[in-house]
Structures are given as C-alpha cells and as structure tokens.
Image 1 (cartoon, rainbow, N blue to C red):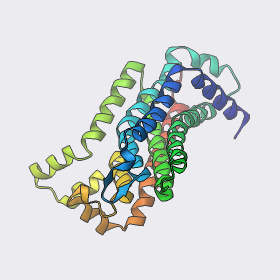
Image 2: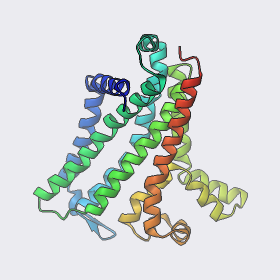
Image 3: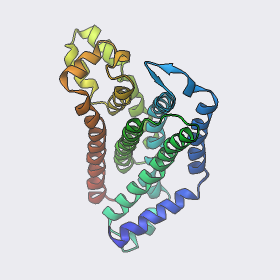
Image 4: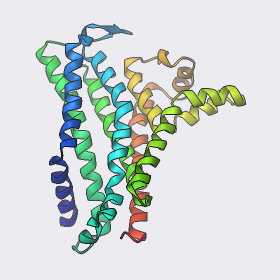
Length: 276
C-alpha cells in the first residue's frame, strides 16, 4: 500500500462520511434489523429455523434486492462523475498514479458499503445474545462472507461501467438495465427459456449459476434449507453436481473473483484511455 493509495483511500472515505446518504444508508439497515426484532420475527419458525437464524435469512433476502442496485447506482458515478466535475484534472496534477487513484476509490467504496451491513448483522447477534437467543455462528460468518462477496462483485461491475461511460446519466441507466437483467434471470427468464426452447434443464440451471445474484440466493438458502426444498427440482441438480460444503465455498469465491476480474478490466481501461 503506497502513500498515494492511502491518501486516495482516506480522501474518499472522509468525503463519503461527510455525506448524508451514507448515514441514511447505515441507519436504514440498522433500523431494519431493529424493526425485525420488534416485529417478533425471531419467534416465528420456518423449516425448523427460529430466532436469529430466521432474522438473518430475512435480512439477507432484503439485501439481495437492495444492495446490488444501491452499489451500482452509487459506484457508477465515481470515475465518470470526477471527469464531468473536472475533479480528474485536479487529481492528475498530483503525484498519484492512475492505478492508485482507481484502487483507492474502489477499496474506499467497499469499506463504506460493507461495514454498515456487517455492523447491522453483528448488532443483531449482540442483541440476540442479550435477549438469551441462540446465536447461529455458522450462519453469521457465512452471511458476512456472502455480503462481502456480493458487494465486491457489484463494485467491480460498477467501476467497470464508470470507466467506460461518457456521462453519469448513461452510467446510471446502463447499471439499472444490468440489474434488471440479473434479477430477471434469477428464475423468471430461465424458466421461460427452458419451456419455450426445450433446453436441457442442466444447461439452464448451469447458466443460472453464472448469475452472481442467483449464487448469492442459493448460498443464503443452503444453510437455512440444507436440501433447498424451496428451489424445487433445481435443488437436485445443484446438490447432485456439488456437495453442500463445496457450494458454500463457491458462493463466496465466485462473486469475489468475478468482482476482481471486472475491477481489473476497469483499471486496465482506465490506465489506457484519455481519462480527461
């Protein structure tokens, strides 16, 4: 970690911490966990899970919908926004390399996005411990890893879009379209393709596993529902292809590696284009 990298990291962190959006985002998820406790969800039971396990699954299902679009909408403006606001010209006058500038902003965005989620999940564990509830530590560590992997994945995608986009409006619109496609391909379009074109179900489900949102969803369910009964027949393909432990590792590593590859491609483009 060079001094230039640390300077960009600190600058972006302090800039984000001064914005109202960050605190609204943090309070929103912390308040959502508190609301789940007050709603009595820890007293309900689904497929044998009750207490904090039930709360964590609900929290993760909400994160699956909100976090990807939030990350994309906020991150796609980072590089292209600096260009439009002429911040890039000022930054290039400093002794900071393009890679340090790029990765400094990337890590800063990861910290300010993931930490509030982790603190909310940790707060649920602390609150549950005070309330004498059993703490499912395996779910806590897995879900923390899944959240970090998902944030990392969509950060990489957002940074790649931001580097290629010529305006903030285009970047936001394109990010929204990508999010809609990924959400649609979780179940709806895949089932339609299989029925319309008589495709091999194994190929369809295998294609679905390339979708990081689908991987995140199954990773969340694999501890909550070890036999994946809520997925129907698709569960047989997933569990027959790989065992449960292997899929848990895959659900964390695949989005992380995908995010890194996308971020690396964005950095490569950023270093070889006219950044002003």
